[in-house]
Amino acid sequence: MKNLFLFLLKGGKYHCNICGSNWLFLNKVGVSSDATKKNKIIGAGIRFTRCWKCGSVERERLLMNYLDTITNPTSLRVLHVAPEIQIQKKIQNIFAEYITCDIEKKEGIDMTCDITNMNSFSSCKFDILICNHVLEHIIDDQKAIKEINRVLKIGGIAILNVPIFKDVEKTYFDISIKDPELRSSHFGQFDHVRIYGQDFFKKVERFGFRQKLINYPQLNKKLKLDPDEHVFQFIKQKNI
Image 1 (tube, rainbow, N blue to C red):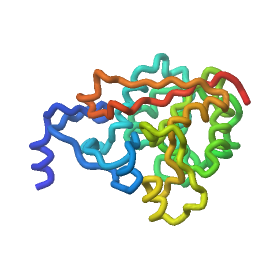
Image 2: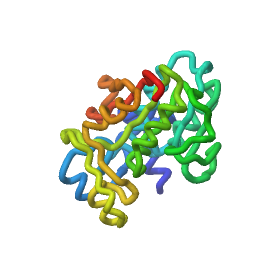
Image 3: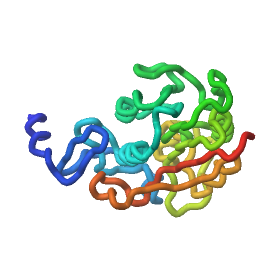
Image 4: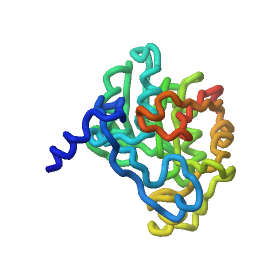
């Protein structure tokens, strides 16, 4: 029955640029919480954006489109933190060096590392660091951003997308909230410790980066992207 259902959905107007499939409509993803009901949080809440085949969601298709525009990938060293499995499979063989890491050992992960202390990597090692939807889990995110600066080359690129308030300037962070249910209510997910505001960009720039927001409005409908969501590209300007 499931196979018949998916067969009937094939060939629609929505395209997945990761697995190449097309669908009449996409699957449900996300959770509803008090946080997502009060304000628009880009990258959070309930959406119908998940690919039925590979499981990609809108931010992953957005990232994939960005990665497809990179020139001379065979000359680049890439560190992918907490990698999206669909993207990892597609890009792991196109760069000069591609390393994956996560806080816990998992299948397909090259090494475990704490993003606030990446002492396994030398300074100025990587050309690109991908760290999507990770910083909202980290208590000391400033220490993590400082480490990201350290392991990137001058001119290197950090992709640091996070769930972010669309119209709220100040990041909401309360270290005293530790209960998973309360975190879900306040931050939108049981293991999140904050919701970033628009001050996120200045926060990262203080650690030697220059930000650039990138989106592809011409692909919003085809890839079922969120028009408010951008790739958060930060270019390293200096060592700190």
